[in-house]
Length: 106
Image (cartoon, rainbow, N blue to C red; front, side, top):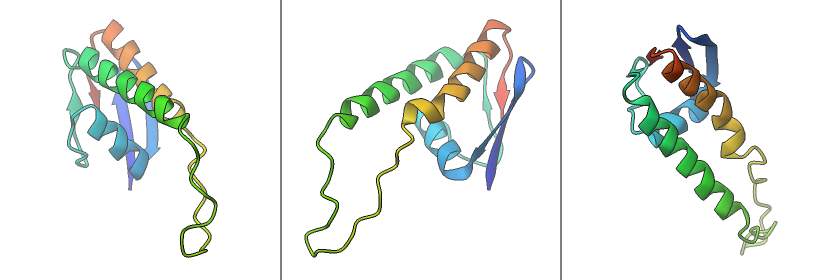
């Protein structure tokens, strides 16, 4: 499934389901197939996303896990795309929508 975020202030933003779900959960929205972030809710959503990005970056400095697990089995590679990169287009959409007092729907 894809999430297609729309606003009259910006072009559409399409995200894969896991990434869109993560961002919606961060801002306190249920990742249903359809939803809305009203213009009044946008400042709180931006603040929540920025706090999550800051927390993610603080955790990025933690020591990396061993390449092999305790049982000697190879572990899957860590995600090299950080939350900051995934959230940046959505945060931009929210900022532009707030500036023009438009809602964001999906």
